[in-house]
Amino acid sequence: MIVQICVGSSCHLKGSHAIVELMKNAVEDHGLEDEVVLAGCFCTGQCTREGVTILVDEEPISGVTVDTFDEIFKKNILERLKG
Image (cartoon, rainbow, N blue to C red; front, side, top):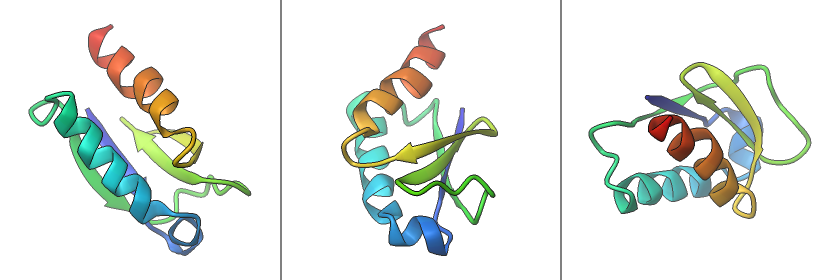
């Protein structure tokens, strides 16, 4: 699975650095280093008013914040890997 985190100017201002750190920690905490490749990307064209956009295997997921991270990680990464 490839997870790209937008670090373009809009997402940068909305906290992409925090999302990168949360994502790195979550991947490590769940022992997914061999299953998930983390990468940065620039604008995906999916900007929203709140949160950062990530791409999970090219599928854009917008609105990722510190508050929504755990739910988004569970639904879009953990459940996909188990499914």
